[in-house]
Length: 325
Image 1 (cartoon, rainbow, N blue to C red):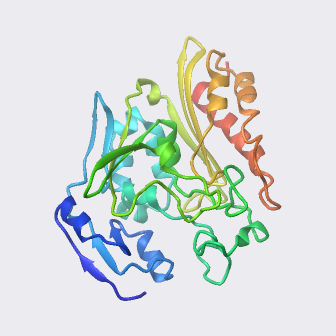
Image 2: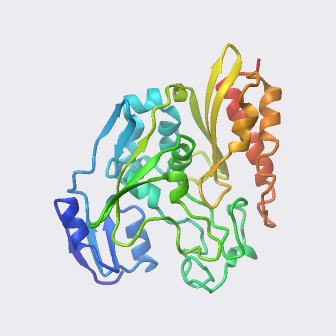
Image 3: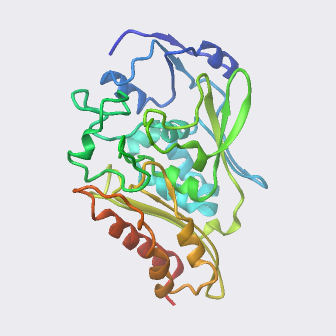
């Protein structure tokens, strides 16, 4: 780890003032410190933001509001989150380990870097780490890599579980700089790799993610997050789905569906949503709605199973949430 300056401001304004080109904000540190040890990130200044007033979990007529410094475990345990947005609690509880969830912040989770092994290996080619160097995953071991939203420059999978649930629920993130405050839909915040995979999101230089809002959705109380992985804990998704259903007298009136583990960003499945609406909550409906999921996938030699796994995961989640008859 290289030497760096360290500051601990007490206000958002002071934190933004301390930040300059080459600096990094420190919250839980579960991503930043790892990357600094590997020298994948070498900030000249680290700004510890843990004293900032960026906490709070509230539910009102405007929806769910969460401060960026709230710990993942606290959000998962919050009674209003558990009862009104269970897919968020479940996605958080299926993330990382209890120790990490007790440390990691919500903002840090949404901004975490990819877990692609080639990105973290300085001896291999990676366009995220070194633009123009190539992508070793294309011809290497790519079982965990993305099949949706990929490009010739990058096939890294987006790592966050809770981001999948938040994208399904149309969440927005709040960003602040010394010049302005702005709000961006989380689905638009994450960028596809294209030819510039090193640019992962819409966060601008000198900006700080201060919180997030999930719009009110009364029927989100019928929601769930299903994660398929190689082992029961502390593992990233091979495929995951976040599903919310509005069912009235056996008919699906509305739906929210997003997928993880298969895309270069959390993947909203609007085609599946449209196929569910107006149809009976039954196995045949779920199978028909899931059929197009992943049809535009771009698979690699070791992850050709992912489109099929995605569809099966969708049907399993829909059956568990909506029943079969």
